[in-house]
Length: 503
Ligand code: NAD
Image 1 (cartoon, rainbow, N blue to C red):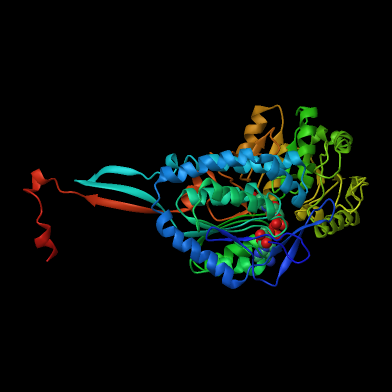
Image 2: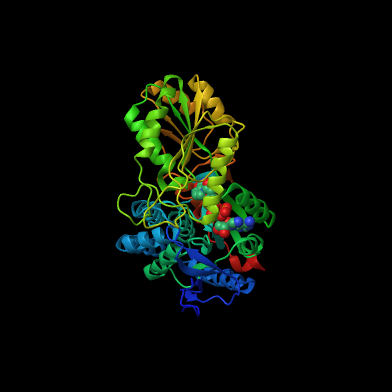
């Protein structure tokens, strides 16, 4: 179905049907390289949210009892369908989000890995048993699904992050209501279509679109048992508080300021390549982007080399071959990032490379900012304190590795960090002393693969358990502990007469 001006509308998914919202409140989904309106996305009504949750509740009655092998086989099929449709998924993603086609395939692929992991649910959702905890008594645990769970996702990984959430929630026997980012919901919806094609039954996966009102309705809804959120620290803190108040289990993965330490003994060329990719790739719109580099001692002489490396990156639309840095997601993001660069200049940081207003032939209306580098950045500056979420790198200096570690540990965020060095002893010291949840050693973006969990820490996360891996099986299940005693009929003198006992 389309609206009167022939722009396609994004559908809701309720009870296995893709339906047109009845809302009066719509937003445009815009191609950030061209400003073309690709679709219109509805902000769902309260009644539509209730219907999505009710559909999940109804489906839970049978889904929770569906054998674990049957659940696993759906994800085996699903991973195959995602692989077969990879190019189409990446093209949708690039059109609405802006990142390069290669990055878009990476976005889908990192989600696909979680789907593959969900297909192994039979080996993950296992309880424990202790035999003979007292005479004739055994104790064991069941990991039972919670009911209807919900997910709220950000714009920057519209394939990977929804796939962090609903496959593992559903594989563990829950039903799900997803609220994708309103900025780029189209690839998420295509992934939901493929999930239904793979065999996810009606009502097990539902999707509602919207903004703050829909998110608040999810936080408050009495029939939603758990909420997974990924997005900014401000919104995540609100979601955590509001949904926890309503008695839900909540996990929030939030904003970041990720530092890399460069020791003078690091392999120079590899380190500069790694930093350029991690700081400017995906236009810096990654929660694990390296946005601060701390050059230790003689490595401070590397700034001109870093600038030269950044200048080799090509700024262009994500669909164009050879592009390294695509546009920012929206005009608002462009204004915000440009404003923060201006603020950095005003506050006295040295603008070594100014990426503002690059000329991008054929895409003059795109939201482009090229790689931007500040040196002489200090802790008080706004560009250090705020998550810029653009291709802007802050370079700081430290006399020793311990001084750099102290700086990182004093920063409130704890999503990711990295060290570049050839010294095993230095790397081990860093690994032990650094207070950040995900650590890279000569690896700039240390996002764990799904047999581990995403383990951002401190202000980058609220809730104990992270997405995917073993931790998320705990998050999406309730542990029930059974203590049982069976009398050995040979020892107690024959079968117990239950008829008499029950009277
Ligand atoms: P965002 O917080 O603006 O939006 C996230 C979700 O919250 C969206 O679905 C949005 O519709 C909703 N939302 C927005 N404003 C709201 C409000 N006032 N009340 C209720 N809901 C609201 O985040 P974003 O801009 O889409 O994504 C970028 C942020 O996400 C960055 O801070 C980034 O670091 C973070 N992020 C973190 C991780 C992680 O794993 N730690 C991963 C990806 C992105």
